[in-house]
Length: 448
Image (cartoon, rainbow, N blue to C red; front, top):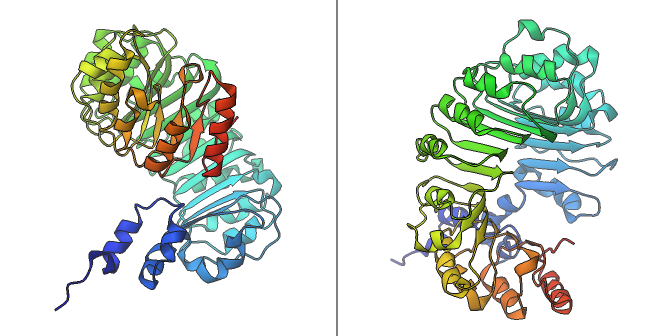
């Protein structure tokens, strides 16, 4: 009896295919009939429609594979086929958006921008009985549809409002929203309405709040968290709010099991703050601590976090001493996908220390975004060959002196690389132009 190759087993091949980078999937689909059947559902799972894309002509044939559809094509006039398995729909001033929504009443997520251009959408939203996630951006809820909006929110589990105006009227004062677990408020308007709404979400677990300008918590969010208004809250993200250390302590004291903490513009982290943070090391998956008062460069905080939080997937911090990294305990956060830290080197020991720092980073084999370091082979760049999932890197212009050999190494080993932010060579403009051209020839974006 002939043994079957593992990649000939459809279930195994489909599982392996899910780990292949999206840019490589079309090529894989052409290998054989079996591979075609495994990769086509993944290729068509998430479609972003723009004019003159081949997807438009092929949509009728593959529409049953589409689970997420992004129609960001302005006033495109097109008869889009029905997608029977569609779960998520993203609309951006699409001239036939009402028709498209009506054709897919089973969707669970809807993202709409500029709905003032298609006001009839508000009349059909109540018909989306499976809707559990709603994203609204740059719009105003019509006064006559306020109650419709609040009734819709009673079914939602996740709501995002970006620059959205909601009139303070209707039935809000007599309603409750027990199903809402995740709320994102970006550039809030009508603050009194938002705060009243939040007070009626007893099971809120994830709160993300973004301000356009830096303010000192004018809405008393910290006070409400400290008062345990939301007893199930475990994830807090504040951007644009100036949070003092004493408020940071109150937040951490109020959360039973903290999975996410993102705060900007705090003052220096004291030992007492770290004592509280340590209580959450076992559950933290996302941590961002950015300070407008610079942490001492010799501070061991970042090194301790990276060597103590096994579930961490995203980490942003200020400065961290290279010697503390090189001589510290091994990093245990092997699930980390996003890393943005500023590692400071002593110019006299950088060539000795940096390879050892690279050895720590090399443990992060799932890393998707990296922002740090002098990326040259002579300083140990080759130790980062394990970062095969890396898609985006940010480099510091003033210290980068990469040459063609570094870029060729990256293209060979980081096959998922999609974007480099910053100058690869900040001292030689001629070499920088060469490197940009080389990257663009291989499909890597280099934003100006």
